[in-house]
Image (cartoon, rainbow, N blue to C red):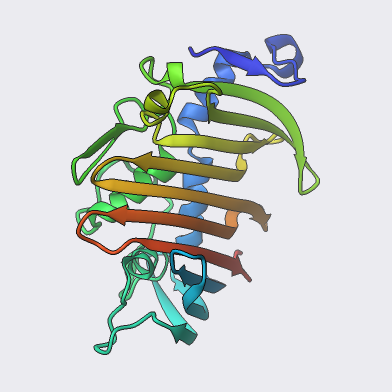
Length: 283
C-alpha cells in the first residue's frame, strides 16, 4: 500500500463501508472504464470528430473533420462515414495520410473493416490487434496493474504506478467532487513536487485523475498526462475522457487528446483530437 493522502474526506469502513486499502483495490481492479469503451463499440451511435495538426509554432497546418455512424449488430461493428472534410496538409498525393497521428486514431476509433464486438472482458490478446492498439489498451485500462510495461523503440518504462519501486515518485490523493451533478470520489495520482529532473524523467505518467460515481463506483471522468524525454523519444500527451449513462449503460461521450511526440528519424507531430459520441441506440 502506498501512502494515501485524504483531501477533506474521511474514508472508513464505518462511514463508507470500505477502507482506504479497499478503495485502492477498487481503483486497481476497476473494469468499468474498460467496459464503457466496449459499450462504445457494442452499441450503434453517431460520432463527430476533429483532428488538428500543428507546426512547431502552434499554427494549424492541417485539419480533418469526420461525421458518421457506428453500426453494430452485437457481433460485428463497422463505421460509415457520412462526411470527411480535410484542409491543409493531411493527405499525400496517393491518398494516404501524411502523418502517423490520424492513422493511429483511425485504427482505434474508425476501423476500415468490420470488427468483432463483445461485452465479455477477456485477458487474451487479440491476434488481429497491432502493437499500437495493445499499447493504447494497456495504458488506457490497466492503471496500477502489476508488471505492466511499455517497451518500444528502446523505451522500457514501468506503467505500474502502484509498484513499490514507483511509489517514491508519486502522491496518491483521495477526495470528493461534484461532477455533472453527480457526487463522486476523486482519486489523483501525480508526480511529487520537488523531484529532481533526473527522478522526474523516471515517471512516464505524470498525472492520472479519476472521478468515481459514489452510487456505483463507475468511472465518469478520467484524465491522463504522459511526459517522457530521452535521446530517442520525446513525448508530451494529455487525454481526457467524459463518461455518461445512456438508458442505464455506461458510455464514453467526449474524448479529448492533445499531444506532441518526436521519434528519431521521424518528423515530430503536434496534434489535437476531439471525438463526440451521441445518439446511442440502447434498448
